[in-house]
Image (tube, rainbow over all chains, first blue to last red; front, side, top):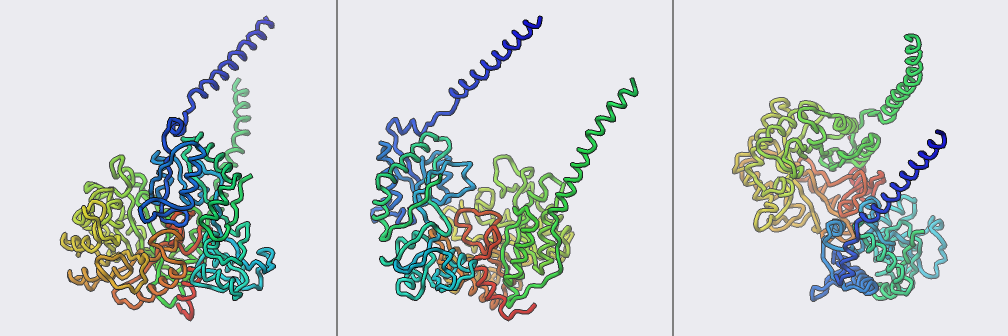
Amino acid sequence: MKRLLTDRRWLWMGVLGGALLAGLVVRGWLRPQDATWARLQGGGALRVALDPSFPPFESLDAQGQVQGFDVDLARALAQRLGVPVTFRAIAFDGLVDAVLADKADVVISAFPLDPRLSQDVHYSPPYFEAGLIWVTRSDSGIASPAAFAGLRVAVEWGSEGDAWARAQGLTIDRHESAGAALQAVAVGEADVALVDAVTAALDAPKHLRLHSPPLVSEPYVMVVSPAAPKLAQMVDETLLALRTVGVWEQLTQRYFPTQPPRPELPD
Amino acid sequence: MLRHRLRILGIHLLLVLPALAALVLAGWWSQQRVQVPLGPQRTVLTTNRKAGVHTRLENEVEPWKIKRTLEMVREMGTPWVVEYFPWAFSEARRGRYDWSHADLVVDHANRQGLTVIARLGLVPAWARPADTTSSYLDPEHYADFARYAAAFAAHFQGRVQVIILWNEPNLSLEWGYRRPDPEGYVALLRQTATAVRAVNPQVQLLAGALAPTLGDATGELGMSDLAFLQAMYDAGAAPYFDALAAHSYGLTFPPDDPPDAEVINFRRVELLRQVMVANGDAAKPVFITEAGWNDHPRWTRAVRPAQRIRYTIEAYEMAKQWPWVQSLSMWAFRYPWPEHNVRDYYTFVTPDLQPKPIYLEVQRALTAGAGP
């Protein structure tokens, strides 16, 4: 009798184990396929959504064609993936909805990472750091933000740099534009400028130095629908590969007179 | 046998009662934790008694943040506050009112010395067909909205003196994605004003809150605010509102840019005023319940942060000089969380209640040398 009970226990354990295994197999079969990736593999084009109103990342040329850093990056990405690319102009507020509604495959549009949406979409690793940075003359010797106290800090009046400097209780030299704040440092009227990295890379005179890490980070990322996990994986891998082979440097040199800070990659 | 059962019951009670007591204690403690004292009665120190802001506290769940937000409004020197009181929040089930959150906002605002302008709208699901948006209201449910507005006016008698009925009905998206309908809006206004005045004759009813828009060619998406207001008068709206609510955004233009029917700018509100005067309503004031400039770095209708500061301060000063303007409330003081879009760049304070430079500059302009 005891032997029979032991045998039955083994039998039930075997049945349960088998059911669990079968469930896992069926789940694997039923897992939704990445239709987007399948379409690309079948010769379909990578549909890139962008709002062409933010040069030098994306804008329209005289012929109405999209141009800019993001456009070239998208072309490099598509080339690496071995697929053609098309661009869809969509207002900035509608970009995420465009990929979620399958109107586009990926957003490449100077899109700042929004942590609130991280459950809803897939974000690529950052490809540009657009946050608040500090800029000095190359020969300034200012080693870190800890040394800002007592210095003349130039900011654009009302900007995030202004807010940051006020919060730190710094001596603020306010200007009408970020470009004017940079110029104040260039001519020695201020010691350090606090400006966004895009403006700094565009407008900083050559003898100024852009420092990283940023005081406030604002990474630009690509956005892919969670319904396209294979595409998301390929976008991530390809973006990192492009960085390794020097495409990031080529693009920044093409569009920015001064090299912007490299975006920090997540661990 | 009975003794055994009683013993079992006793053991169960011994186990269950402490758990129940713990639950009751936890509930009591959580109530104690979230209560924030109103504090002493405060007064707004300002050089401009017409200055105000539109807060967005309807989604703020933390009482201390509601209080701190309204303290910061007072400290900025703005005695008026426009706040949204969604119908769907206060009457989620037909006929059952829950004013707890609205009470919290109004009581804290009043204690800070602020005058509340209550904006009513947002249709609950039970008052509209399925697959419609929260701005959709059929004529057969106008009476429901009127009953809600009257209940609001009665509940807040003596605490809220000004009520805005609906928002931007000249836009399709604010009219349930239907063609804007001035006659329909006036029918809603008539029923609602009648119901509200029956329970609270002192309250000041604001109509319109029209979106500054040129309208589209078909009239499907939006109707010019000027044409909509005239159509309201044509439909007999005049007896059913005490003042006009107006929205007056500056976009990329400075505040003194001259008014033009084909341009959206801050002084467009003067054209609305002309429509009122032309229709014999010159005695009624205008409350500007939304206005402002945006300093988003990439929006084509934004200005630089320095311009936004300057234009905002100048606009407050202009409103002070306009005898027909009762108050000017800038959009929008703060959101409970970052929107991560252009809307964040209208605010004065961050979601974590840090003042932006524009807050500090407006505060300096409105409170320097101020008395109560």
